[in-house]
Picture (cartoon, rainbow, N blue to C red):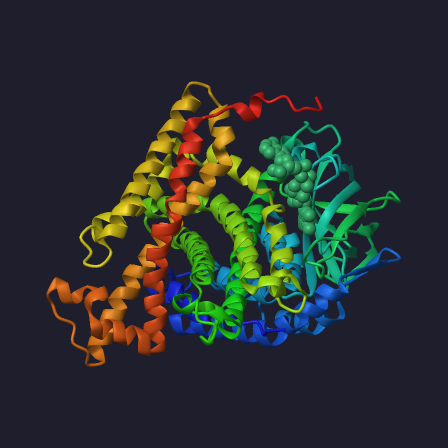
Length: 628
Ligand SMILES: Cc1cc2nc3c(=O)[nH]c(=O)nc-3n(C[C@H](O)[C@H](O)[C@H](O)COP(=O)(O)OP(=O)(O)OC[C@H]3O[C@@H](n4cnc5c(N)ncnc54)[C@H](O)[C@@H]3O)c2cc1C
């Protein structure tokens, strides 16, 4: 089985060469961090991912989790990596130092999760929800709750979960029936939650569940849901552990992938003695839970991108080694030497398609994390609002597009391996099995699309749309006459115009109360936005890569003439030679080729999607199924 490798150079390129971290790192909040510190964090994370987490990945998949006598055990191979992960301060990396967190920018959470999810998604899932749960307590809980729980969770002493789903309340969270009854200074909780990730396990001494429940007499729907802290083991005022809290895992699921992540049915209060503590006010639980859901959505989007990148790395390594057939130009010659499959045009197309989506999604996600940090540190109110609007619009796209395309990239990873990809001897089949869940949980991708068209598009009279449009327009204005990428910039301009037309068509339909048009087109619209954004981010990378390539070439003594003819990358032998013969040159040249490839081969899919949305066909609503 191949070792886990990540393109750490690409992550660094996005962080330090594509994004301008200056304003974030010079803010008061993050002034303790320099770019060198961030690079060191990334290198350490890669070491942990590669040397400690990845070796536990396959054993965890094969052994899975066990449930016996109401207790859950995770794969044996997970215990040591978990210890090192918590001891290294990775759980609370981007949480407040006041409560034992690392205080790093949110962007770094995403960047290290790229490595951790890529190395071992199931194990990292055990760490994903804990900081989110603690952060929710920090944002909405009482001082006493913060003091009791946050530090113990940020440091990994206690785990955390989010408990929303019930058998009748999946996407429809407001249908939850779990009850809460006031009792002394707390509440008695009674009900069943299903599909709870790491709902029970043997990695931490306690597990703090954040449970949505309805207080007796509260309104129906999400407006009547309150949020409760429900520990597995009760916690004394001094933080020591007390009695068990009548919280039991009654079963675990048997799943397609993420075998090392226990998916638990949790029964609260079957003996009438499960105590919960209200977070914030009664009936305001959903508002608080949204904070955790939004954080988790970015993390889930990163699961898609991380497994896509892992699959691409594995497929590329395999394709370089695997020889099959002869070169296409000598296919009639039986004596022609056998060539690595990387020589075959179709395999090259698949590899480059993998690279484009995997790296494009990474760039999109890290940019969204950057927007979060810019909004949190902005000194100018308008600036802060603009970055918040960008983050709001990008969140459902990051979650849904990166997991849908991430899954597809893992499928291409199998295709590149041929029949061997279907076997457990190679990592790509596990990548695909593990990746599918990301389009389902944390709000299915269909629900993300509804969030995009129903909430984010009309938000503050189109503020999000204006922010995205402004960002792309500024790029177009700056690079309209770019010596190398003029035609790609023109293609991006055309794509932006098409996107604007679709936005107008959807708004017009909605204003005429034709809600079916945007609802039927929502998923296609989200994918269309993803295509446009990937073209933008990949082209932005290419422009930056080309500028650097040219500079490095000059610095190394190469002559690049000032006249346009010679400056053109394709016509400059010196540049082409530099790009071929140095590692950095190949990396930067790869960025240029990837953007060109995406814009020529993948961006056109966007026009079919635009037609699909604006055609406003209603057949799906009109069909009468044969069985009706
Ligand atoms: C492995 C795993 C781990 C999970 N971890 C957690 C966890 O830690 N905590 C937790 O609370 N939950 C968790 N979940 C639950 C998960 O979030 C839900 O499965 C998900 O929200 C979908 O709910 P559902 O399965 O009931 O599907 P349904 O809601 O029944 O959806 C079925 C289909 O209908 C669509 N649909 C439903 N309603 C609408 C609508 N209004 N408009 C358009 N389309 C709609 C959906 O998009 C989907 O395609 C987990 C699930 C799994 C499988």
